[in-house]
Every structure is written in structure tokens, then in C-alpha cells.
Image (cartoon, protein in one colour):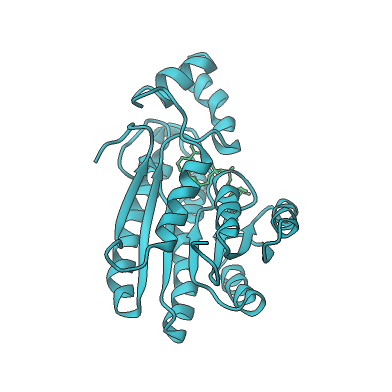
Length: 260
Ligand code: NAD
């Protein structure tokens, strides 16, 4: 098993991509803390993984709360015995053109994606530096870390920002054996995407089928959605990578939508 003896904290792990990563990391032997604002769903996910023999902890927390993030990291270390892997994954979407975007919605998206990445990073680094344990930090970027789409201003801005944060972590973390990388998925059929299909259809005056074929998957090489398992496989690979040779990078998993 690639992650035996390791402990991972995964935010937004009660659903979608985060849940797939939690399952995959547990299958590879990691203990996993499942952090989500939806505490009930986090509890269900932890129960499912525990039933398969994994060590888990459910954490009901809002990743934009400094206190909640610090407490969640502390509880993970106390309960599961350490912290080797952080996956900063929790996310939301908001569909609106910039000229109609409320400042409160701009700030909410930046907080969930970027402030939370900082808060979870800081809490993880403090532990990893103090114990000289090293570690792996993984940020859930997006093809929208590399490309822009209309109607997604704060999401695109925040996802681009994660690349900068990751590169700083790679430089500051290297002397402490800490690696940081970003995963950039194309569209994955999760609740986050299912919610935006009718919203994009209304905003663009298209059918839902056309939003999928002509907007979401238009630039892919095969018209296929990326799967949550594809993303989880990359997360396990990055978490298990044995050296600083792979740090400060972004890995695009998108059926060719974006090519580096
Ligand atoms: P999802 O809606 O299935 O899961 C997101 C999870 O984050 C939910 O369980 C939700 O409760 C949790 N969450 C939201 N706000 C939170 C907060 N403030 N504190 C704690 N938890 C919170 O969505 P998903 O598609 O699995 O998205 C996961 C990540 O992947 C996001 O960062 C998203 O931007 C990114 N991503 C998704 C896609 C895609 O096509 N689905 C593509 C690229 C990147």
C-alpha cells in the first residue's frame, strides 16, 4: 500500500472529488480526516470508510473559519496521530457575469477557495515544521487555474491564485521536506457541476445537453468527463511521491481540454 502509516486531512471530503480521494487514500492505507461543512455527510463518509477497515475522523467545519481550521488540524493530530498529507479541496461555484456579481459572492468564493487554502496550509505547515516530519500538500485547482470561462470570475481568479500559493509553499517548505502541488481537473460530474448545468443553460440560452457538449466538453479530445477516480489516482500519486523532485507543479487531468 502506497500510504500506509500516513495520515491525511481532506477538506470537502463528504462529496464528489474529495470523497473519492478519501476512499482512495484509505484503500492505500492512510488514516483519513474527512472535513466538511456538511457534518452529517462527513459522518456518513467516515462511517463508510471505517466499515471497510480504515481509520477515520469526521470533522464538521467551515474551511473559511480560522478557529475551525486550527481546531480541525489539532483534532486530526490528536486523534489520528499526526498529519502527513493535506488535500485542500472544498469548493463552491457561482455563475454570474462580472457586471452583475455581488461583492458578497465574490468574497465568498475567494474565501472558500483561497483563504481556506491559506488557513489549512498554515495549520499543516506549523505541525510539519515542528515535528520535522515533512509532508505533502495538494491543492484542488482546476483547468480554470489555466484557462478562463465567462460567468466564473471569482472561481477562475481563485483557482489561478492557488498556483501562486503552491509555488511559495514549495519554496518555503523544501528545507522542511514539505512538497506542494496542484491538481487541475477538467469537468467532473459531481453535485457542484450538476448544479451549474441548468444555471449555465439559462445564462447562455442553451439546452442542458448543449451546455455539456458545446461548453463543458467542447475542448476535450474525446468528449468525456474526467472522473472523480481519475483525480483521486493523481492525488494518491502526488501524496506518495518520495522526493522533492515533484513540488511546485500543477498536474492537469482533463481529457486534453488544457494541454501544457
Ligand atoms: P462537491 O460539491 O461534490 O463537493 C464539494 C464539497 O465541499 C461539499 O461536500 C461541500 O459541502 C464542501 N464545502 C463547500 N464549502 C465548504 C466550506 N466552507 N467548508 C467546508 N466544506 C465545504 O464538488 P466537487 O466537484 O467534488 O469539488 C471539489 C473541488 O474540486 C472544488 O475545489 C472544485 O472547485 C474542484 N473542481 C471540481 C471540478 C468539477 O468539474 N467537479 C473541476 C475542477 C475542479
